[in-house]
Image 1 (cartoon, helix red, strand yellow):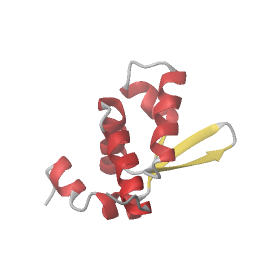
Image 2 (cartoon, helix red, strand yellow; image 1 turned 30 degrees about the vertical axis):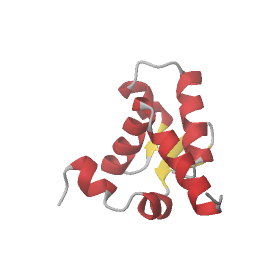
Image 3 (cartoon, helix red, strand yellow; image 1 turned 45 degrees about the horizontal axis):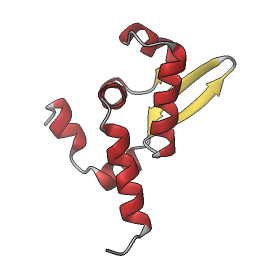
Image 4 (cartoon, one colour; image 1 turned 90 degrees about the vertical axis):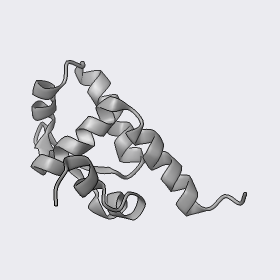
Length: 97
């Protein structure tokens, strides 16, 4: 099987979402829109360094975009990548019509 950019990136996306915490991060942001890292601290019982690790993996898969505003970090979804590799994700995973 020939390797190509699409399949390599698809594997990164699927591996990133295979973890329950990362899957929940993506679905939360999908449901609520951009969220600050402080918002995730309230949702998860993980340490800041563990959450940071999850953000890095999601960022490396191009699923999330982070931006800094002063000392605050905000997370939003890269909908282009989500829709490219997982069309219908929002409808299926949030039970939205």
